[in-house]
Image 1: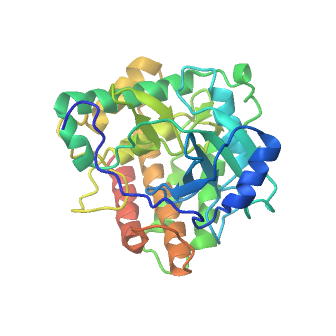
Image 2 (image 1 turned 90 degrees about the vertical axis):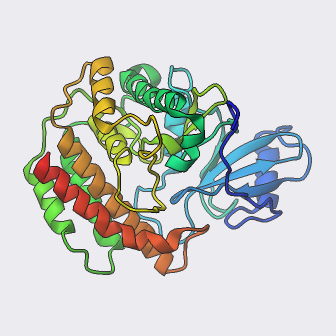
Image 3 (image 1 turned 30 degrees about the horizontal axis):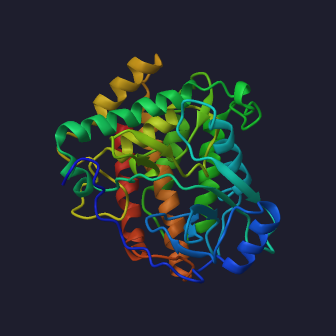
Length: 352
């Protein structure tokens, strides 16, 4: 594969009326709020790969944009706040952190049935699997993943007050609230017995580390939530639905988790660790520590918390799947993954 050629992507079907997006009402709203933005009739396709908020590529035949809205059906409180996502992307657009330009926020649910926002379309590849990364070769793969760490350091170096995000969250007691929040999310979505999940939750609560100075936290930072350009640089960081002000090491813990081997032949969850040249979790931690100057000695706790958090998220997605409220492929395997994440979390916390 030549340099800059993206890996094969799931073909998204362009549709006059994709699920969850009323294009006629969207066009009327765009014409009112951003006259002249759209020219010809709108068509759209659901961008596959997301497991939470729905993302659409919308085109008028000449130009294209991206529309984001919450998932259909069951929505956990605070989990799909379009205003927050729009706000943080808009604030970071003037910083070294690469994000798309936001064009419009609509909180009137009568337009398409849910709040949504529109942003520019950034071309790039969200590498999701080791197989997609492998054609880049070891050197390019290593460079891409290390640049992911560098971009995270850039994000955590942003002064929240300077970009208007000083009140974007409550850093004091952040980890305690995170544990409570994800415990509540679990209760809201769990409809089956999950061995070890309560043990992991309680063990995390007993071993809370002291947080470093707060920063803007992405909340779901991984390789397939960024777009990599043809020159192997990161063109945009996406999916800010879990962003807030808090402990930056929670982002690093997630990145370490996503860079770890799940021990499964196939997984619907993003993991690129098997690609030749992919840096080890230890290398990622080392690079982050060197570039940020932060103490990462408690990273085992943050990584175990990431396993717990993802177990809860996956259980919520599995719950929506059982209710027939998911859109796209791959949801039937999600439920089987939850116990795997619980086991990894317990092992990480016990073994460090």
